[in-house]
Image (cartoon, rainbow, N blue to C red; front, side, top):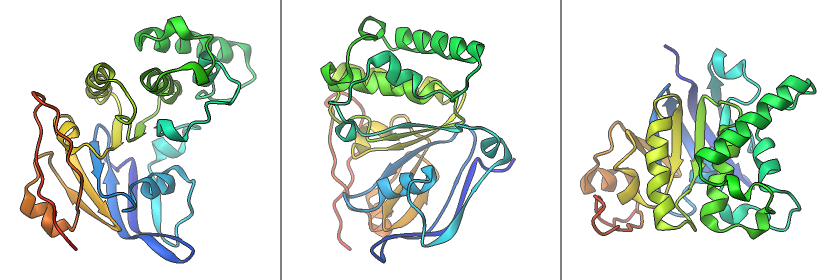
Length: 248
């Protein structure tokens, strides 16, 4: 079966300075890929390229026929700190904005019903009429995860979802993602290697170049070879992996 997304020899630059160079990557159905790397290493740029928000200097990103045939094949959960809290929109309307724009009344009704169900499932139905500026970080993540799932995507992309959230929701989030992974592929960017290694199936280290590791168990020596310095955050009794700091 063809991969959902196939990236070949991708180079992305800002002001002609490469941030990503010669990147190759395949994302297949039911993959759960953790993307790690230092700040400024190109993780978010990789997401922007996949989402079509940043044009590459060279290389190709191929989408499968199933992905190309959908209006919204990718669900995206952005970083909370990049969300404009002053924008005058309610929680319910934020979730609805993740749907496909259609004028048919039945399509609107279906989207509203699904939005209600997602909010209930995430435990935030009670704040459906609140403005997003009134939400905590954890509530914001719940709401935008509902938005990302509204169109039944084949791939869910999350950009550091464990930032600015409460510990309780962080645990619930990863449990939810493992369940969702039974139905769709997930690409998760995180600085918290200790947490994601307990749920992802494979790891990509991004530091200008991308090094793919086909499992969630990765040694200090392998990371050293990948030239991928990262910050480690431990979580007490939660299983975690400690990765040695290394230099270019």
